Amino acid sequence: MFKVLVMDGISDMGIQMLYEAPDVEVEKKNGLSEDELAAIIGEYDALLVRSATKVTERIMSAGTKLKVVGRAGVGVDNIDLEAATKRGIVVINAPDGNTIATCELTFAMMMAIARSIPQAYKKTVGGEWDRKTFVGVELRNKVLGVLGMGRIGSEVAKRAKAFGMQVIGYDPFLTEERAEKIGVKLGTVNDICAKADFITVHTPLTNETRHMISRPQFETMKKGVRIINCARGGIIDEQALVEAIDSGIVAGAAFDVFEQEPPAPDHPFLNHPKIIVTPHLGASTVEAQENVAIDVSEEVLHILREQPFKNAVNMPTVPANVLNALQPYFNLGEKLGLFLGQTVDGPVSEIVVNYAGDLVDVDTSPLTRHIVKGILSNQLEGVNIVNAMHLAKTRDVKVIVQQSSASPTFTNLVSVTLKTKQQQHLLAGTLLAGYGERIVQIDQYPVDIAPSGNLLLISHNDRPGIIGKVGTLLGSNDVNIATMQVGRKVIGGQAIMVLTTDKPTPKDVIVQLSQLPELTDVIELTL
Ligand SMILES: NC(=O)C1=CN([C@@H]2O[C@H](COP(=O)(O)OP(=O)(O)OC[C@H]3O[C@@H](n4cnc5c(N)ncnc54)[C@H](O)[C@@H]3O)[C@@H](O)[C@H]2O)C=CC1
Ligand SMILES: O=C(O)C(=O)COP(=O)(O)O
Image (cartoon, rainbow, N blue to C red; front, side, top):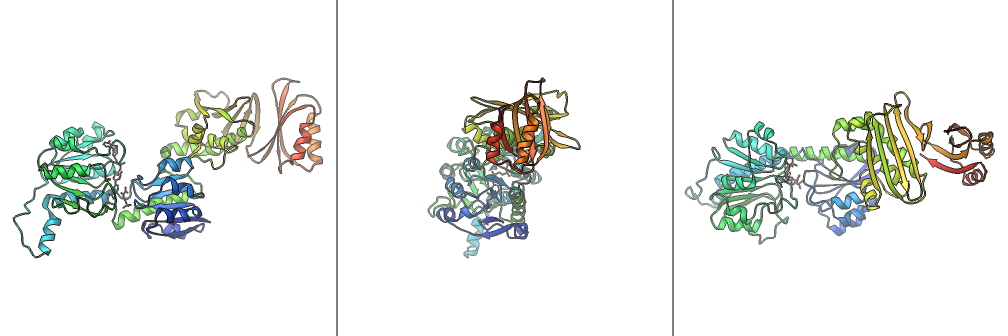
């Protein structure tokens, strides 16, 4: 039974599928301190949060059973991604569900500062009928600068066009063609500062975007500009904004987010007549909360049940067509890794993976992760496809990936060479239509083995009678041989024997086998 901890008031309707899952037990908690969360997180397989809970290094290391942290929303700046990756914890988000909600709040904020709606409301309900102070501006024919033209920024731009605004967009990933398609002019931050009547930010908070609008930018802005931040506190320098308003450059600002949330009671925004604020409400609509909770629940179930998933933030995204093409190979890759990892003793220094045939046409990095996972799980605990490459790197294991355009015998071939200081082994496998996964080469020997169950890998001198001796010894110890393969290059030379057995071979039988003078090596493998 998987235990899932749901925090931050995530929508009950949205997580219905978790309540209904027979293999999941859901617990909901709100407002836990870091100490309180650290004390209980060890019981849970999954943690679901919004932006309020900080999932720190401490929480990750206390979460000894944690497999996944699900963010019911977009921004993951409250989650220590590096700490998660190190421990093999998948972090997923729900990037699509709250786009419209946040875009609509941005628009509401823009209109509210254009017409001073909150200030006018306050006076009116306070008994004053003041029609002179609140003369606003129209949006029509004004220039809107959008910093960050992703999902939310693009939707804001679309709506601004409908209001008759001219939009200048800045985003390192916005191409000329896409900008033209949504009717947006491409510009730089400087262009936007110089020309915009309204500026709205829709980037994540990163080292690059922190204070991307600060004193130097305010100084070049058009007098009377209005600023909106419904993305993340810290993208706009709060102190510099207050100064820019007080010096008459900025006519008004609307903020949904703060550098520190909640802001301190004496935060300069809270009593400023030209700044309106909301308490991080961008994603707070019934629809968005249901959407993000559904998306994140679906993904959490997939991860807990070890099924494919798509929105991992701490792993490269795999497009659906690539995932479909590679999926059938994942088990083969892992088995090749598991097999090879059991054939060497010392620390692994290098893994060379060669893809041939059909596999050269796709990005095979997800498959490489499965191979590396298989190899390392012989030596390390808790290896998974999230942390496999990270663990290889931190242990100085070099992973080299090559491609051969032609595989002479097979339509697809995955060959893996594993090196330690003293040893080196090669294993090749393929996916055969109608037969499934097969190991087709061990070192220089061609073989044909289904990679599963209990195996004995025996190196020996090719002499008459050896197969009989091995069979007799195993039989007399009640170990039944299911299949046997012998590979050799030349008659009378070095050869290998691969046996699959119905049950694991006891240790003392392995010792007896090793003592047969014709055998040079005996390795027991479990796949
Ligand atoms: N107030 C709220 O409740 C909510 C806030 N957000 C915030 O909004 C942000 C944007 O969300 P989406 O549009 O869904 O994300 P997105 O990933 O679709 O868009 C972000 C865009 O920012 C661009 N970007 C990154 N660095 C940049 C830079 N230095 N300069 C200019 N552009 C840059 C990216 O290329 C991308 O196109 C999120 O990161 C999140 O922090 C999101 C949802 C709700
Ligand atoms: O999705 C995001 O990035 C948000 O900022 C929404 O935050 P919330 O889930 O409302 O705490």
